[in-house]
Amino acid sequence: MSDACCSPGCASPDASRSPRYRRVLWVALVINAVMFGIELAGGCFRHRQRLA
Image (tube, rainbow, N blue to C red; front, side, top):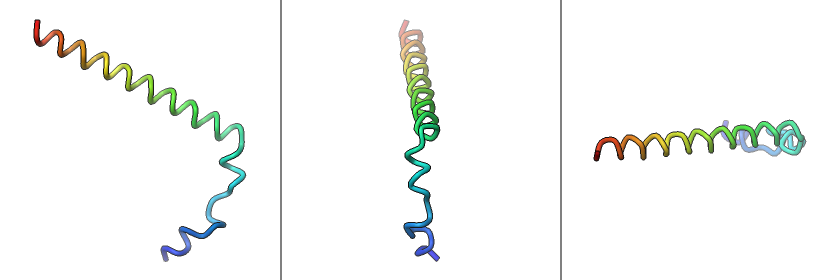
């Protein structure tokens, strides 16, 4: 059963090279980075408010 999952024909190599796929990955990366920044800033702001 697990052999079928790791076979070379399972994933299309062309899909990972398409411009649309790469664009979607970049958008997801940017969204994750922005959310990380928001959470980091929010955590610092809360920590500063708690100490004040």
